[in-house]
Length: 198
Image (cartoon, rainbow, N blue to C red; front, top):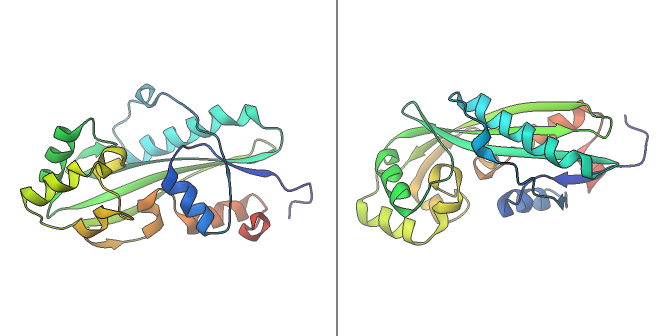
């Protein structure tokens, strides 16, 4: 086990959903958005895409802290051979939902956890998402709510989007933005326990 002073837990993300997930699990992170330019990463494989972004976001934040565990995350939806992040605008979100409805997609979330000594773990979790076969009026109403515009895959399972998903296979918190079970395992690999941060 780690014997030095407990490091600060830093979330390298502005995501309110990720912060709330951690808070609900008893971890209250210091939030430090990376402001990393995601357009720098041009990768078509979804797992490589999200893990690369997660690592880059965490790496961008690490130099600002002397004794911290830094967590970077990024999510994307893979469906029909395409990888989708956040929609560009309402028109894009509507078009995506017209493609997604009645289909199964895979939500990938990359996790990068960097210890104070520089040791870095990078992992990816995947959850299958079965989208409801909703009509155009429902899609338009959902997109007009504004919720999907800020979400990878154009839906928030923990918000109104939860009404438009029939079922999940895999970790449900992964779909919200980070896999809590995976985080627990990653912390243990670095010599910590989740309860160290309660």
